[in-house]
Structures are given as structure tokens and as C-alpha cells.
Length: 271
Length: 368
Ligand SMILES: Nc1ncnc2c1ncn2[C@@H]1O[C@H](COP(=O)(O)OP(=O)(O)OP(=O)(O)O)[C@@H](O)[C@H]1O
Ligand SMILES: [Mg+2]
Image (cartoon, rainbow over all chains, first blue to last red; front, side, top):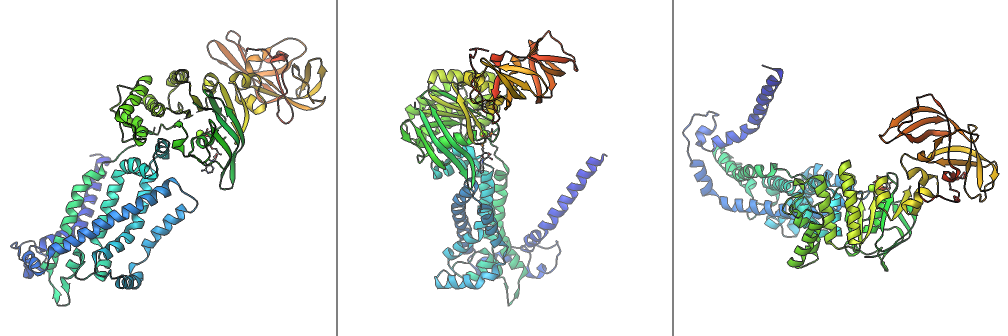
């Protein structure tokens, strides 16, 4: 066996190992969800599968309302982020000035502060504007939360587009919106799709703001999960079933979308 | 079709001035070539004409309309970029039709315009393809085709052939000449390539460090360079420069004493030139010969390069810091180290004063 082969096998084992460790919690949740509460405390894999937990979860709460809220909040906030980020990134990428780089870094730096630092002002703002525990309220917060990432990623993809292509279109009579619509969006579609996917995932999994700003009306799936670890005690099996139900849709989306997103697009127009 | 007038044009990026005092007149239907070393501002000037860069000061007119504030799409120009800048996700047809679609032209009109351009450029069988399925030469044609469909008054080309291989460049160069003959539209063409400039241009504009050094026909620039820069830039291999002082005047001739003792007469108008003044003598490689006699430039051979029908001899000469190059017939062989005595016809020589300005040549021969 050659050293190159050995190395390949080594890397393979390492990769699988890391993947397994990362997947383990999800596996445990998946398995525990099908156990009874008694079995749930043991980590054993030998048990009689049951759908009791799922049944109870469905009886206790309106799963569909949470799913609806999660979908509405993550999809709409993602679309809003993109609608704002694309023109912003367009101007930063194609009409930069001395402050552009600083502005980008500053925007990103807002993501480095702990969210809890602005909890009180945001809570009060939401309360006073009547947006507390409302879907529009969460949408606004999520949009603002994801905007720096959206701008940054769109900027990175736009930077790869040769500016001559847009200039050619400008000479052909395109205005800024037409440049974006007819050229920038189609040529950066794979990049923007993965940006959108990332934003949806981030919004879907967001727990801090949803737990603090919503309770009944606007509560998304993260709140739904949290409701199973309440002061009356932990219910492992039901918590697992709820978590399983919460992550299943987004995992399905990611699984289906990844094949579409990997496909890159090259610029045949530029030598 | 349209003429073009540029008055006192200036370009500043923030505080840095990159172009100044640009004055240029381009006649309707003229083929104008911008040449100059890298970074001299050729693309910047072209882009200001196109409307892709703001004009910091001065005025640009196309026809009789002031264009400074007119957006690129309304200037009646079309531009072909060095990188072609084709729309990667569109078919060739759509690439060429894009501008017309935006302009709201009817399907039949668009079809006719695209087919006409495609026929002129022999790409009508490729219209369903995407840019990445084409060769470099084909992409270049599409880029030109896209320009043609706009039916512009002025074509702008920024180094359109620089991404092609040598053989294809020659072929496309001829096609550019033909295109200009067919369309008779004003064309402005930026290039690094001497041969492209000399063969295509009605008028060459030589730029250096953001200024125009000289404007003229290829013939004028070659035979009457206005200064040392243009003399050294036009012509390949480049003109030989020898340092010397004015020794005296003899009828129509200025006698130049070279720094290494040689003497050469030059047929230029004396002007304000005085004896003892520092000057630079310029002689093109094809005009420098091995001679015998009294007026000679001593030099030592360093190498010889054969090009088939002729050869270039490289020689050292203390008066010429860059060395000398002379063109000799293929049969003549010179070993390195050979001492040579060189000279040139006084009417073929150029003379530049201490500030680099050329002195007007007298009795200039028409052809080389
Ligand atoms: N955005 C900019 N900011 C500052 N200076 C610039 C900018 N763009 C161009 N320049 C400067 O303007 C000058 C002219 O550039 P330009 O691209 O027109 O040169 P060029 O003659 O086309 O060169 P090349 O033959 O290499 O294409 C250069 O010195 C360049 O550094
Ligand atoms: Mg250039």
C-alpha cells in the first residue's frame, strides 16, 4: 500500500469520525423521540419503538401553528434581507469609495456583539410599537439580524462578476435595476441561493430573539421545543420528538437544496 | 456617423490628476488609434468618451451635442472591451439582441439587426450557443457583433485583439480594416500594438503620462515625430538616440559632434539652435549604415539577430546609452567585437533639442 493511499484512508476515517461526532446529538434525538419516557433515560439502542411521544406532542400543542410561524418568519425575513442586501452590495461592489471596506467591516462587527446586550432596548421598542409577540415583529428583527451576513455574502459574489459586463449592459441602455435584474442576479444565482438558504437556516434555528419576543401568537418552532423543558421537569422523549419535528423540515430543505447549490457557474464571457 | 471634439479634457481620481489638457478633433468616419505605454490613460480617455467615467473638467462633443452629462447609452456609441464582456448566461443571439430589447424594438427589427451583424462577422451558425462554448476569436466577433447591432455613430475598441494569438490577430486586424471600409463609421481603437496602429489608423494619437504627445497620420508620426518620446515610441525596433552637441552649421545642415567623437550632419531647420547646445540625434535602425569616410560614428558589434530576409546588428557606442541597432542585409555577418564605422543620410536623421522637442526636418523624403 502506498503512502498516498494510506493518507487517503486516514483522511477518510477522520472525516467520518468528525461527521459522526457532529451527527450524534441528532441521532440521539431521533432515537429518543421513538422511546417511552421510561426508556428515554437510558442511552440504550434496544427498545420497542413507539409513537406515543409524537402523539402527545401533537395533542398538547398546535404543531402546525409553530411550523407556520417558523416558515413565515424565516422565508419573509430572508427575502427582505436579500431585497435590501442586493442593491447595497451592488453599489459597494461596483461603485466603491474610500469608506466601502470600513462600512462592510463595521456592518459585520455588529454581528460580533452579544445579542443580549441590546435585548432591553429592542424589547421595549417592540413592546411600544405593538410588535411584541407578532410575526411582523420577528420578521423585522430577523431581517436586521441577518442583513450584515446577506450584504457581505452578496458583496463577495458580486465582486467576482467582471465589471465590464455591467458596463457593457449600461452602454446597451440598461439602468441600475436592469443591470441587477438581467445580469447580476442570473450570473450570481448559485451564490445568492446559498446565501438565501443560509439565512433561512439561521432564522429557522434562531432561539434567543424568538424566546424573548414571542410567546403565543408568533412563537416559532424554537419556542415550541423550549416549551418541553419547563420548570415541571424534563420530558426527554417528548422534548426529542418536538426537536425532531422542528429540525426535520429544515434538514429536508438543506438535503434537497445542496445538490442544486453545489453546481457552480463559470464566466465563459471572460478569458 | 459623427465627428468628435474634445476640449481641455481632464480626469482626476480624488486628488490624483491622471489626464490633462486633452484636445482632440476626430472627423466623421475617421479611424483613430490611441497608443502609448501602459498606464498612460488610453482606457481612461476611451471610457470618458463612452460615458463610463466622469469627465472631471473640459468638454466632450459628439456631433454638435455636448456629451459630458449624457449617459453612456444615449451617446450613440458602442464599445468592445478587451475582456469581451459578453453576458455569460445568454446565447449569442441574446447577447446581440439585449440592447435592442431594452430599447423596445420589435421582434422583427431585432431579428434583422442581429442576423445582419452575424452575417457580417460569419457567426450566424453559432447564435444558439453560450459564450463559454466559443473560441477566443469567436467571442471577439460576438463582442463586435453586439456593437454593430447598436448601429452606433462611434465605435470604441479597447485593445480588442490583445487576448488573441498572433495569427488570429493578423486575421482580425484585416477584418477591422474591412469593417471600417464597409461601415464607414467613426472608430476609436486603443492598442499596444505598433503594427495595428500603423496599419489601421487614419490618425494616431500618442499618449504619455496622461497627456497627448502628438496627433497625426502614421506617416507623419513615423517621419516627423514631434519629440523624442514619439520618435522612440513609434517604430520597431526603436529609433537609435545618440547624445551630442551642435558643432556648427553648414548650409541646410546642422553638424552634430557626438559624445564619442563621431560627427553626423543632419538636415533640419536651424531655428533657435546655437553652436555648443546639447542635442540628441535620432536615427532609425533601417537608416543607419556601415560607411567609410569622414563623417562617421564609431561603434562595436555586440550581437546579430537574423530574421530571414534581413538581420539586426546590435552595437555598443558610448554616445548611445541604450546601444545601437542597425538593419543589415541577411548576407552581411558581423562578429561580436568587430569595430564598425556607421553613418546615415543627413535627410534621414532626426534632431531633438535639450528639452526633447524635434527640429523640423527639411527636404523630407516621402517614403522610407
Ligand atoms: N480608479 C482609479 N483610481 C486612481 N487611479 C486610476 C484609477 N483608474 C485608473 N487610474 C490611473 O489612471 C492611469 C491611466 O490608466 P489607464 O487604465 O487609462 O491606462 P492605459 O493606458 O489604458 O494602460 P494599459 O495599456 O495598461 O491598459 C493609470 O496611471 C492608473 O493608475
Ligand atoms: Mg487600458
